[in-house]
Length: 485
Image (tube, rainbow, N blue to C red; front, side, top):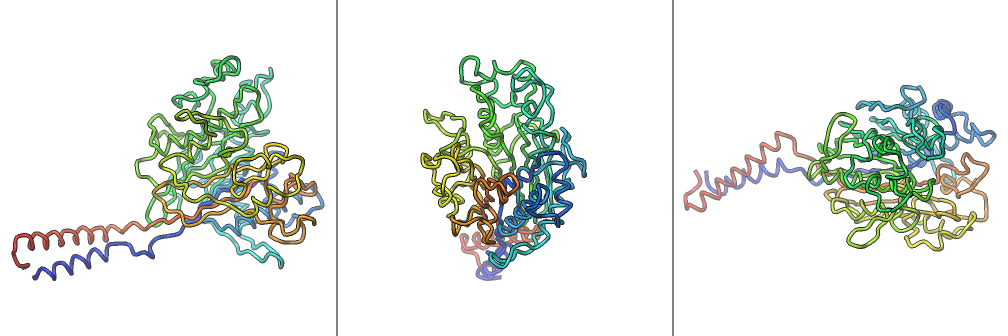
């Protein structure tokens, strides 16, 4: 066979094996702290079982209306892989939580009802247009530390009782949990609910740089220090298979760095909860999960970090760390991580507009350093003001081609938010006629679009190897001056 024939065959084999450009899949990852937590255990289950009960006439109707608004927002975002924070946990329809790791494939009854009765139903109106049903074939609901009694007086008030003394704050077991929805198959889960804070090297529990009584090692008893869990809810690696590739969806909801005392126990815990993923994606070997596994991600793994991290890059009450003599807010541990892609920051015109809306009781926004278009939460204008606290952060080996925050602009701040326009789904910070004073949540849905290239099938790999071999034969023939036979 002549040399050029070998080359033609080899090139054909390589072309057949290589994935075409069309094999790259655009995937939208999103997070939404949807405030689907309720004041009492079992309320969310009851609300989601009664989608027709939405109204403004009574508290129950207002809660159900809020769930419909959340569903419509999610339909408009139309994420492929979604984390919902503040979604009360139940075990097969029984409200509550425990330290039991949920197996692959577990979804709570509340997660099922939200899919069947809310996400699967069209929403919208003539003013803002209608939405289509949103279907997720795969779900996972991890257990949570929130409201789970620790047996310790963790706030040092002399009484062992209430949400402050739970492993993670919650007025009942399971409040403020989370759930994951995916259009792609979930092929693996790792949870870290019971990982102990003290087992993180250099942690702020046993290595608090603050001197005196506000040092956490002095604030907590030796027994508390030995047993405190790091995750206020859970840290969960949900592995989804997309285009033949595994992408690790790293989900969490660290505690707010507030609601404590001068010891700043929540601020320091928030810092180390954020640090957990920074160490995990770096492959730290000290980590252990609830399933009996150890270590972090393998080198080169693809991941997307998502959730409400309760930490703004510049503003708010985050614990300040020091790197190279420079102070940083806690979220800087992820935003400045070399394995994290921060090339595109989700933003909205609504965030910019909201910073200048008529104040709801203060002027905190006026002193902020951050870009308001990147804010993701509408908090009290007295303190802390609107902040960027919700994140979707892909790995550096994933290309970003789009991002956004669902925060429409109010078309008329002089009228009530009941005209049917898009802004009515988010509203303003305080509206006493709505559940929890908000149309949906004080947080906004955030998404990032990434490209996931296809992995060649095993048969294609064989073709590619064969093609390379043929090219090698052709090259050797040319180098030796021999004709191809």
